[in-house]
Length: 294
Image (cartoon, rainbow, N blue to C red; front, top):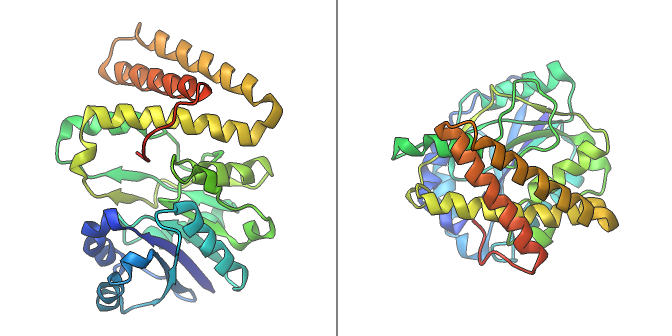
């Protein structure tokens, strides 16, 4: 049985590539399964082939080139197009700035079999230089329980069956500069009644990035979440999207306000983050656009 995993090799994460590859080669591959990694490269990342060839010896891999510079949704679509021509059991996505738990694949296969689901997502833990930012990440990441049904998963850690390729759903390139294309992609399957589940046992650890350990990075991130949320709602709900967007602005504002009456550090952070998302959504209604992907 064949498994294909897609990894996008990006310029901004090249400093992490050694760590990622070292963790990748330690993955336990169950008997009767054959693993193949599909590395998607931008033209300027061709030189990374040499490092990958030196590190990866225990399974097959293939390089595909994305000619559209820094277009993440397009890179993912290249992988989907590749899969259309293959006979496989499972496939998935991983990020190149993470360390992968050695039992990641083993646990994903077990989880898919036990839960009979079409798509599974797992947590991304965070390696920190400054421990005070742990609360920031705890608040930023959605809280999910093992085995829980979810409406979307992220491509930093996901696994799926070949069943999803029966549809023509692809990653939306309109979100290439703002993020959220993975959320929209998997939400499409949720609305089509596919089974999406959360697997806490298959986790990855994002390597520490000093530029993110900054309060303003988290504020900008939540502003961007608000803006991209508008775009996703417009694509999902069409003509009634303005009603959905305004209702979400009201809901986020209300929750942010109520959290101020429950004075803990995490509740204060949640309130600030929700207010930033409100500002991002309001700004989007008046043609505000984030200057870059954060």
